[in-house]
Amino acid sequence: MKVQRLGWAGVKVTTGDLCILIDPVENFANIKTFVLDIPDADYRFSHLGQADYILLTHLHTDHYDAGLIRRILKPGGKLISSVMVANKLLEDGFDNVLALETDQTYNAGAASFTPVFAMDGIGDKQVSWVVSDAEHRILHGGDTIWHNQFWSIGEKFSPFDVVFLPVNGAVMHFKKPFSPVPATLTPLQAVAAANILSAGVLVPIHYGFTKTGVYEEFPNVVGVLQSNAEQLNVPLKLLQAGEGLDLN
Image 1 (cartoon, one colour):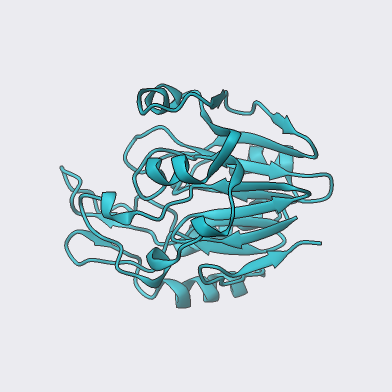
Image 2 (image 1 turned 45 degrees about the vertical axis):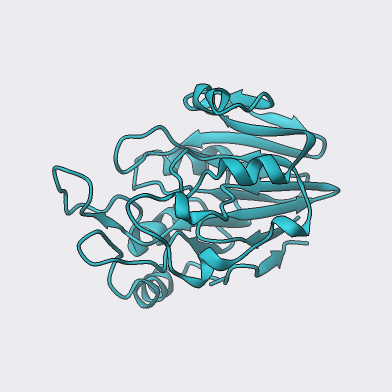
């Protein structure tokens, strides 16, 4: 299995002859509240090949790019989501949607996909994804907040070779009434979750953008993340968009 970080929260998984994308986005102009003016958002990958499967954690526009999916999903490929959001995908014109219940596993040759519990910071429907092959297993956390199911996910699926978790602890001033409580995992929470999940390595995603008074990232997110990871003895790997790991 090979894993590659795409822009913002996107991840590419290659196992055998299968190409799997999780939350791939290229058109960040769809985000109405702000524009991600960071290098991650400039990374382009749709010209590099098509995907057999595309998995979606949820349908926020920084995780769901309908135009990109139409371009990059192979003929006969599947768009996979939780049952909680499948109707919206059908409304958007996708006729190749595979909707899974939480903890329901879909086997695709040597690979398997399982949506597991996640909790969105503003109450939208969301899952995390467990992706496995015969030798390796990863978890993609979307933009989840802290929740009490990390232990049960770890008990069922760990160890994980890699966990991709949001780390930016975003405070969203545009959501009214305002709450100062972070709407994604903070650095410490991401490190703690990785520890609970027995992660071989934590790869942070969903960070690097802040806009004062609109969408404010946790202060010194990378420095705090590195310090927390060292304190809890959690291996940490910072990947830029386009960089990857060969788990073999």
